[in-house]
Image 1 (cartoon, rainbow, N blue to C red):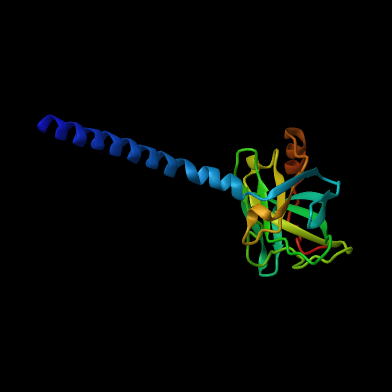
Image 2 (image 1 turned 180 degrees about the horizontal axis):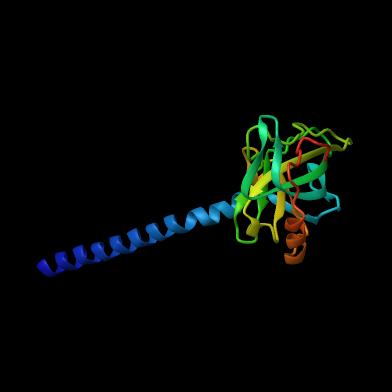
Length: 195
């Protein structure tokens, strides 16, 4: 009887330990799996080409670099890195849309959001209407070594990101083009000027 109790308790301890280890492994793996499931559906494109998603169309017209930005508050705003100004046009396909998710992604996996400083914001449209192209631009403050290979990812965002649309646009910034862009970076660039 004693041997039987020891076997039952030992078996329960081993089974419990195995179940706990499995639960901890699943807990560690789940966020990565869930993150990929929640990514929006991306449509890829490049500078100058119209990228069409189910909800909107977008075309990047220009990428400009600046060492400093003209500010409405006085002296130009400077940065340790570089300001990248991405000018684009967008239009909704069937009903008005808002591009709520805008980031600049680097090949290293870093993401940068627009709107770096007070007093230097660029004009952006809130709603894009069907069949009407609207010009806009975004200003990103990034390190100089993050320019090469950067991509613009623009999307509708929302509560259900896995059902939203996003345009993933290669800005064409190869190593040589990024060096050329950085070498010709403007001083006191006015981001409010027409993109």
